[in-house]
Length: 168
Figure 1: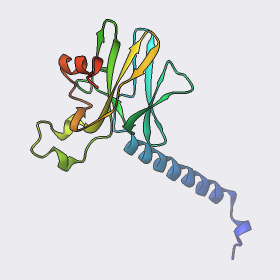
Figure 2 (figure 1 turned 60 degrees about the horizontal axis):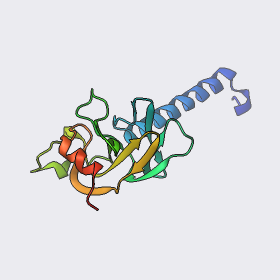
Figure 3 (figure 1 turned 30 degrees about the horizontal axis):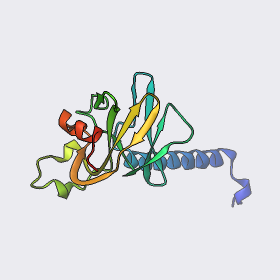
Figure 4 (figure 1 turned 60 degrees about the vertical axis):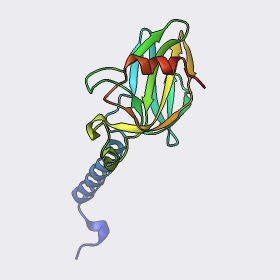
């Protein structure tokens, strides 16, 4: 009968390797659930914008700064774009700056029934516009609109105008 200390070293290595593999698969599965393929990094001219998780809230940082600003949108989040292949949708308004829209987590599949959008558009009830002028970041008030912010549908220019010049 072999005692635990008499096990060959190969068994210990195999057990260690299996533990590491299982842990990596677990971490990958958790990350995949938290990031459904949203556009979280974009750049415009010399400005780089990054969205990230900060305590369950979406936060944004400019040009890799160590500190970002918390948005009023839950995580996961991403920049609105017209389709999966395009970059962040944006419009520039003189005197205001470059306007981007951030959408929050997608609504449950049941919410899309009898709506004008479908589940493939990855629509959220939460969104917020952010404006870059020079290197200054301006955050507009976050909004809660049922299926109002679709990651893969975009907005027409009139909506961006409303984000640039809100009536608050």
